[in-house]
Image (cartoon, rainbow, N blue to C red):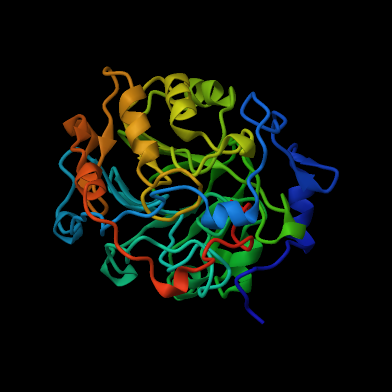
Length: 370
């Protein structure tokens, strides 16, 4: 039976995982230990506080969106174009190759589409609206990055999927053919026949799991995409780690970096960046053009929905080309900084009433599994 929980790796897949330097005592481990808090003792919020606590955790009105289909019908002028489709889902066009990252089209980041963190608004484009996708890059198996609903549809595609060690077990359980799945360890390059793009899994400071008992049974990664003329860093989910310096030394300079800025809390330890550590990570990467991700789509933390981007605007050095497109807006980093504070227009609007089915929407089924 195919369920949103996926499947545990076994057989040859599991044996390959066990050969990884990151596999220790039956599970994957970070290079640096995850600290209990961000350098300070902070109590973990209860589930009740997570469900009912905090203010302004949902936008008062729909966020403005662009229609990327017109842009997608034209070739990128610079050779590098990025469309933020929400959270960590991006369509990256790099030197003639189209990459889709962490595709999530579900209503809720949860194993249950009747409960769990709900999407602020419908996706800006349907899967059917996307241009031809040459490869899907999948960072890890948390619900807001690996979506059962979406991959049940993508199973019918012929597009190869590059992902972290072990994650392919979920995909195969959902009908994705084994010969479409390429699983890689950190610092390994994916070999995708016919693809003129180097895709390398790089370190991240995070964890994995779709059930409490399945914690760290698969690997988590960031990724470097290197085309003929451009190099892109997709940070996915991570806390601050000195390994960013190693990534920059091996693959930099980068033409654009996507780093997570939302869904953070001091008690969660070093598993998410948040705005302050995102700026520190960006500095380790050489301060390339910066597109913040992992915000503006789902309510996954207790801070205000727009708190990450407001804090980020204060922190990012003026020498950094910051890119904050609307959802669905296709932008070319070569054009320079793109910061029109569209979110502030939304923040000033009257609050919209919460739907009746959102009572208790944030459940332990999805938190703290991200």
